[in-house]
Length: 78
Image 1 (cartoon, helix red, strand yellow):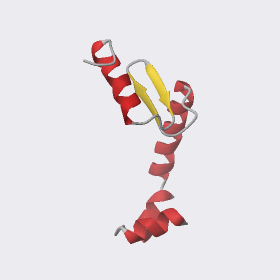
Image 2 (cartoon, one colour):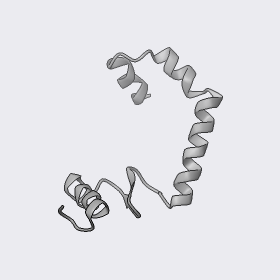
Image 3 (tube, rainbow, N blue to C red):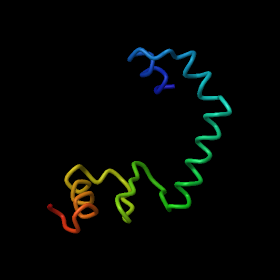
Image 4 (tube, rainbow, N blue to C red):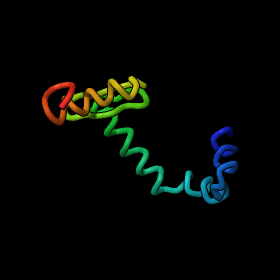
């Protein structure tokens, strides 16, 4: 796959990566992550939980900073 080709390009041990990808530990972690995402209503990537807000999609850095500032200090700029 393209992801494995990129991993090899940047120096990952692809054989180890392929082995780890099929491990029970990784499968269990992914299952737990999927369940949490479903419970939070996260149905896209990237998704962020900022304070009590859920941000879905590539909203851009300015919008994400605004959400973080609002969560931290109650307004868009601190």
